[in-house]
Amino acid sequence: MNIILVVFDSLRKDCLSLYGRPYWGPVATPHLDAFAAESLVMTRAYPESLPTLPARRALYTGQRVYPFHQGDFRLKGDFVGAPGWGPIPEEQPTLAEILKAEGYRTALVSDVYHQFKPGKNFWRGFDQWQFLRGQEIDPARSGPAPSETEIDEWLPEELRIPPRRAFMRQCLLNMRDRATEEDYFAPRVFSEASRWLQQNQDADPFFLVVESFDPHEPWFAPPHYLRMYAREGGRNQVISPYADRALNDELLEQTQAAYSACVSLCDRWFGHFVEQLRVLGLLDNAMVIVTADHGHSIGDNGYCGKRGHPAMPEVYDIPLLIRFPAADHAGKQSDLFVQHTDITGVILRAANAEPPQPIDGQSFVEAALLGKPGHRDHVTVAWGIHPTVITPRWWFTCSVLGTQCLLYDLERTYPFARNVAEESPNTIRELFEIARADARGSFPDWLLDQARKNSRAPGCSVLAARS
Image (tube, rainbow, N blue to C red; front, side, top):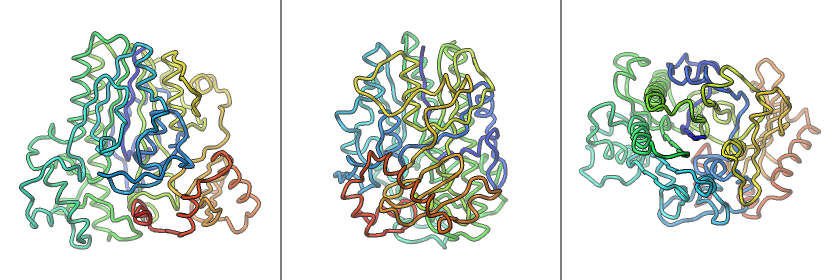
């Protein structure tokens, strides 16, 4: 069986109509919706660790990254990232290596530039890997630099601080020659993946990973996509301030429009890729899995960005769709708890491949299809010093010291409207012990030291505490 894994970065689960809709209104994703109608849909899927690189390390190996015992990376050529922001440990086999040994032809098409920075090795085991340059501040081009006027066109006055100007300068420089829709990143990723399919029709079987950094910010989309959502004459706004209530109503509306436009762009070109599978006669002989590393807050509860504390569903809930050959099991849904590591288990089971060492993930397909209980009664998801434990009743986030506790009762009508931690001390203790048990009983000293600094900077800016 051919196996295809498609990973979107920062795709909110609620942008797919079968999961609901974002609070600001529906987003057009007709191709993903059609794909979902032919798939097994998992409704309680979560990352194992966040953000970008820890999530992919768990997905590519099936092994836990939390609690980051091998996670204090300080590599030349990259910023000091969140715990776990580094390469895959050499002793951990990757999916690509395992499947290659089983006779699969393996390939990776990706514009997630973090995977290809100095010292990273996420392409390990792929017969062919293709890195599409230019996302964010990837040094894909060195000049000529955009003018200050060009930068100001895309950076609202309220957000103009030197780091953001530098960020936008490189983004615009990388985009300098973009002329048509096909020049944008998601079209390039899915076009190259489609080209690989055409060039490798002799592969039997193959394992293809397609990584789309979009709809990660900055949310640049062709104007005709933006017109689907934005008011005419509004200012451009394509980045997150990573702060509470930093955007006025006008800018927040434009941010939501820009994100929605980027999601619809991704959807259109995902549809192109699925159609390529269909016309090549490959769709009905493949398992195709679609997921995301995490989502993104876009004004939810006033916040714009992503962060581990407070952990919220718009970031932590992820879409997970599995289309089987010939669309078997179309329309089936399951509310089993599953994580990225379990996707690894599903892929290995589909390939009848045994990993050379045990993995933490397990295939859940049989239980999901038969309505049986899964192997998890909860999940623990970690971002840096903050693990989050989710059970059918509770959503609990704290620091690895057991402080900064937030507890939400999922049985309430509006569960995230009130933190009930102070009135539930026994529940807090029980859930923290679950978090510690999932850390195999202890946290590394360096992570505890970081927690003692009590850094509460929002989102990715918490990285400053590790510099």
